[in-house]
Length: 363
Image 1: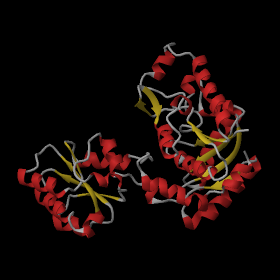
Image 2 (image 1 turned 90 degrees about the vertical axis):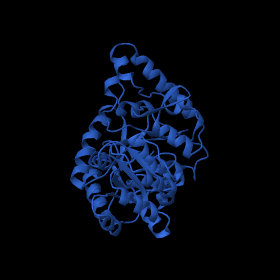
Image 3 (image 1 turned 45 degrees about the vertical axis):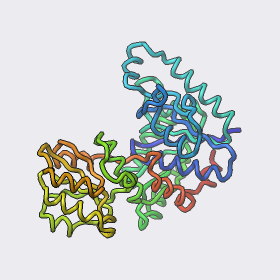
């Protein structure tokens, strides 16, 4: 019999994919056949001519699940999906048929199945199949992932619990993620006091880690939709600091911190040349992840040659430095299959932070 857990969230970016990776990794130590499905896929990529949810692609590649995306991502919201549904071109019955077909086949194939939701419980309501309804269709035990302060976490969870229970889903667990180590036990104790009367078990997730929270250079490249020039081996480096190169060249260098991405205006030839030269020095290479050279002003020919010859990774785009800085500050980094360091960290820390045996016992 297949054991099933539905990974829900109180909102986007609550850590569902991180927890899903951890549970897949831990479940594989006990069960021979561990599978994954994302019933509702709002963020897609095109693979082999069809839309596939990005998280399904991630799990397939991390855990070598093949590319049976009809099962792993039965309902991917391609660009016109919602409009076509509301216009009567996609029938609700067809939506349910695809999800139920995937469910039935996955239950035959796997001993343990991780079912990842999309955002909060109501996501998908526009097409008549939200996360709470999907959890009910799969007859899976629901774990809601949340983060943040105690009060805000309780408020957000309670709002979602109501919907899951309304849809008769087996809402049994809450996992609080991104805990501050010195406040971990206090936060868990408070949440247990809040949810035990509602027959909801509370588990601790991962402590806050800049490795998970911060983007890679490849992520920034994808976000800005501009390729990286220079050292391609640096694509997977994690950016811990983002610095505007607005001060004098010496001050910018003095303020460099570990794993910094520098945003430099294209007219700052002296700073571009200095940073390019420093990239050859190992101590500075540790500090400099790469450059974003922003602005419509052309880089001087000699400076451009030094920049290219240095091998320093850089992204060149016409937007202003302030626009780029704002875009990066507002972005939330999402794990992808090429984020080897992040994935290794999750697997390495899963046993220390997540009580899989206790979670498994409630399924």
